[in-house]
Length: 402
Ligand SMILES: [Zn+2]
Ligand SMILES: [Zn+2]
Image (tube, rainbow, N blue to C red):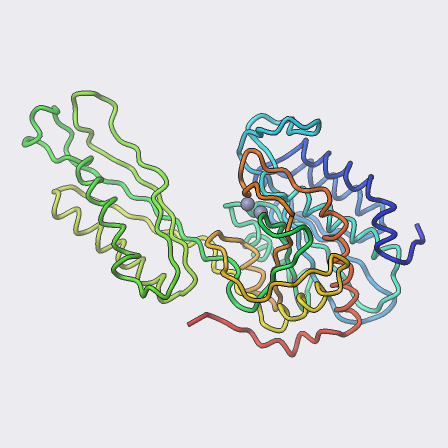
């Protein structure tokens, strides 16, 4: 393969990339189980002659591409995991695994990065290093954190790291990237209410955990509406409630689960404190015990300003040549690329998939037409970075929005 123009190269190989994407789509694997996915990536990357570091966060791997001499080091990250969702689509390459599907497009993310690796490895006319980072368990298990705990940036140091996610609701190939907030922080909480189970006709002889749960559900709605500065976006959502087995008995226990999404660490601290205070108040009022466990999960994804500007500058060169969005409302969903951005300078962008099916929908399918544009973006980002268009030492971390 000698095509120098990356657009020509990607177009000539487009059918192969689509076939690879369909293969991954047919064989989805959930968090930390991405064994056949990792084997597929390892085979392709080995064929390209890249040095591979495996065993990071179980199934994660890094492929290193050395240029012709010493120079800057850029990290490009794609996520690998699928979701425990039954696919609704009927296309020929639909998931062959019951109850598991690539409903977030990570199959396409891997192929966009693999295609970029193929082009760059066959055109090593640059100084420096490109590290292709394939990360497991993005969806809820914190594979990004695990990779860093396993020494990702000690074993494979980078000057800056970049992430990319396909995004519904934006035109095909349109890039959205801004300094500061992209995705919210995610915390999880679980609550156990213990009362005194009793005959349903004799409530005065027990203490009712169901009525206490009802009061708690209502009271938790006051956290966002009454305790948090309205200028700070936040969501408190209860996602599970379980209790009772009988028609004519009050259960002794009700269990609830929920999640908190936010951007401001100050507001997050207030919400955590109010969760505990409200739980204690409900316990007193309803004569039950309420145990609450709060588990911080993902920090907010906050782009470093210089890195975000660099991504936007490269995006403006794409042939789709659309307006690059550089100021927009962040998403209240969360992303564990935040752990990488907390460890190294960098930025995370959305790239429009030209469709309106929501991420995590059983009807979702990555748009194959995005593969070439996404791969081209990665290639141009790496080439620009290695050519010194962007100096990591100039990065001014934006930090926490006020
Ligand atoms: Zn997702
Ligand atoms: Zn995703």
